[in-house]
Each structure stands twice: as structure tokens, then as C-alpha cells.
Length: 218
Image 1: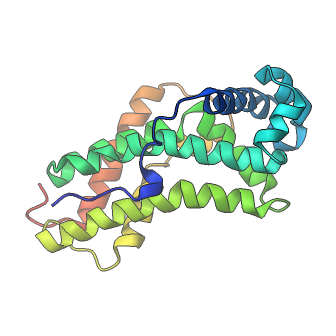
Image 2: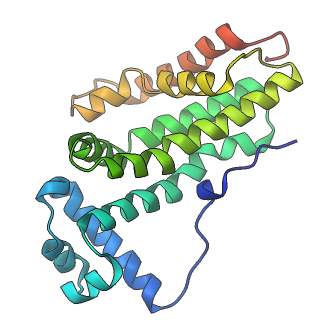
């Protein structure tokens, strides 16, 4: 039996038409401006110029900057998260699945867009808490729930021994952030980033299985 992704984690449906193309054009422009200036420093005028649309057109699609940013966050999560969670659907052995998920998550959390979003959301959360809520609901919450569902399935199969699958999923994703995530967020250099990534991936899986694995896990 496979674990299904929640509807909000599924890839967005393919839309056609001028309105969807224009919306994507605006989101692409917003990425450039938010990355360069953050949320507070970005302006709707700058986003309109970067997107190649008028301010009137921009406001036809998004009522304000917070609305645009929240949509940008949701779009980014819906575009990238299903790829990171895809290994759960393959029904591979436990160790192989965890390794694939860890590799995908390490890649995701170290992407420039992910680092940019994290910095903006942490900075703006006290002033715009709904931005943090939107990110949590469309990103980490879905990832945790999806992995927790897979873990529960493994418990039923006897391949993992876990009392709290949600907590275990949170632990696993935290292990995937060891060394790499904070250094990336602080813009600190790496001497050998590929080797560090592999070390984090395999150590996360090893530590998780050392705590929750059974004889059937390997």
C-alpha cells in the first residue's frame, strides 16, 4: 500500500490561457525582486517593472504585496515539495526510501530560493505572521504529515518501531538540516559542500534507523 500525498502537496494542474501565463510572469518577476530586496524592501512598482506589466495589471492579480508574497510562497512549495516527497511513493525498502528523501530534502533546503524564503519569513514573521503561517502550511506541515504517514505504514509493516510518527518525522527533517542549512542561511562558505551533503544524508538515515529501526528495516 502506498502513501498518498495530500492534495495541497500535489503538483498544480496544468493551466492554459493568457491569465495564467501573466500570473506566472508576475511570480517570476516577484522572485527577482524579493531575492534582491527582501519583503520590506520590495515594492509593487518594482515587481511590476521586473514582470513587464503595469501596476494596474499587477493589482488585478494581487491585492497587495503580502497577498503576492503568500501566493509566491505557496507556488514555490507546490512546485518543489512533491519532487522532494516523491521517493515515498516508490515502495522501496526503508533505508533506500529514507536515503532518497534525505537527499531530496537536503537539495531542497539548500536551494537559493529556499534560503531566500527562509530569511524573509523569519525576518517578517513578527510583523506579518500570516506569511509564516502560509509557508508552514504549504511546506513543512505537508512534508511532516506525508513522512509521518509513511512512518506509520512502516510501523504497521514491522519495519519501524515508532510511538509518535509525527515527532519522528520532525526529527528526521531536523537531522537533514545538520551543518548545511544554518551555514547556508548565514552565507558561510563550505570547503567541500558535496562531501558535507553526503555526510549529512547518510548520518541522518543512520541515526534515525539506530533509534527507530527493526530487524526488518535493512
